[in-house]
Amino acid sequence: MPRAQKGAARRQAKNRWFKKAKGNRGARRTQWRRVQEAVIRAGVNQYTDRRLIKREYRALWITRISAACKMRDINYSRFIAGLKAANIDLNRKMLSEIAIHDPKAFDLLVEQAKGANAKAAA
Image (tube, rainbow, N blue to C red):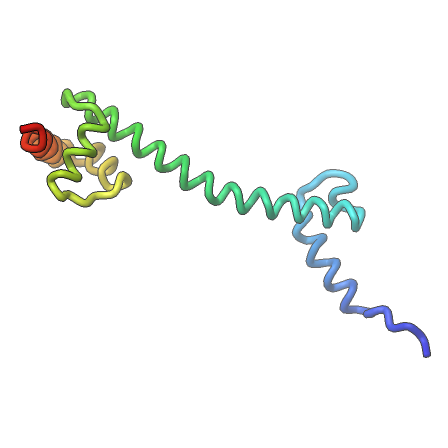
């Protein structure tokens, strides 16, 4: 009995891999072994970069909030500590949006943070 070699299913499976390897140069696009290596490595990088994107956005929001705080004579860490003491639960994304688009509301948040810091110190 002849050995079964998977037939069309093997070509279809390989085509899925080759499609994912599109955009690579040379052997990374044409040779089966290199395609597998390239696609697996690309998948690892995708996984890592999805987390890096979140990290970079958070850093951007913190930089924006810090700059807005410096303009109002308070540093970032005291501002965040004051918000926590005042039980104001706003994430950093929203705080940075408020700082950019609604400076008066941000002024109020700074005043509340300063007041909460003063109470905690006393």
